[in-house]
Structure formats: C-alpha cells, structure tokens
Length: 48
Image (tube, rainbow, N blue to C red; front, side, top):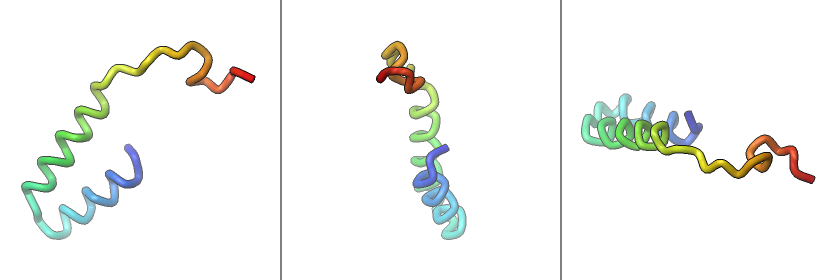
C-alpha cells in the first residue's frame, strides 16, 4: 500500500471520518484491481 494512502487512512480513522474512509477504501480496491501493463522487462528493471 502506498505511503500516502496509509497516511490518509490513519488520519481519516483518527478523525472518525467515515466518508473519507470509504473513499480511500474504494481507491485502494481500484488500485489493487487495476491490471498491470505488461511492458516486458521494463517493470523488472532489466532493460539497459
């Protein structure tokens, strides 16, 4: 999970902001379900 999302989730839980928690939760599931583009070796860093 990206650090910016962790920080915002912690802030939303501390403030008990259920609307923000729901929105961030939706963002996380969208982020996780998005298929990765297959760029060959570019993602693994094996290109020169």
